[in-house]
Image 1 (cartoon, rainbow, N blue to C red):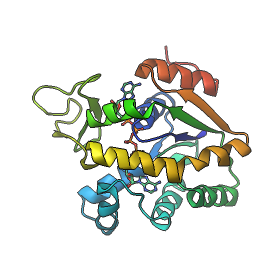
Image 2 (image 1 turned 120 degrees about the horizontal axis):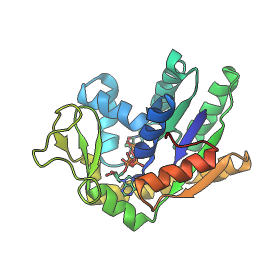
Image 3 (image 1 turned 60 degrees about the vertical axis):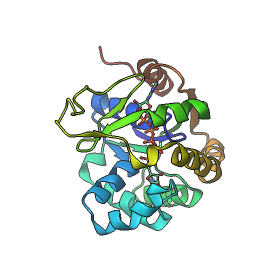
Length: 218
Ligand code: AP5
């Protein structure tokens, strides 16, 4: 399965990609997670990306395309991959097409998750994440433990710098301008499917499996 999860910030791409990865053993490739790890480790990539990320802007296409080229040629991607947060611009989508053509591979589905923008603002300003393993919580729907430590790894639970309301609104504007045109790009190829993401995590997962023609783990 080679799948793109498309959708505005906060629609639940990361949450659902992790569930698919756990059930089907296909890697989630999140460009956001890769960039945040680079920022945390203060690598050259991280230093270059941080200023863009902090203001909710996109990191330049050539940087991101290089990351994906390297990542999808790893052996764990032979069975497929779930792209979460990539592509985000038409040049990124065209570069992905070229990479896959070189590897003689196709994309199976581009799955768009849609949630009303004001609900997204509420979700993201209440999101909390583990600074070590990236586990995702939400103060309203899935609160982290009261001691502020991640139950999976003991890491400190924090708010992402780009989850402040003003930055969230900028990220939504950037999505509408630079990423939303991908819907038409993939619709023309006949591989775009859209689901309503304003439902519980389990219900959204069920809709995704139905759309992909897959069954939930018993
Ligand atoms: P990235 O990390 O990709 O951020 P994003 O696309 O803005 O997506 P999010 O991680 O914010 O949201 P999500 O859809 O994964 O939602 P989640 O599951 O966490 O990118 C960050 C930055 O990196 C970008 O701004 C850019 O600078 C840079 N970047 C990354 N990729 C790039 C690229 N390709 N090109 C250029 N730059 C790039 O859920 C959100 C919250 O809602 C959580 O609290 C969760 O618990 C909760 N939630 C999830 N599902 C539900 C539900 N069904 N009901 C209620 N609550 C829910």
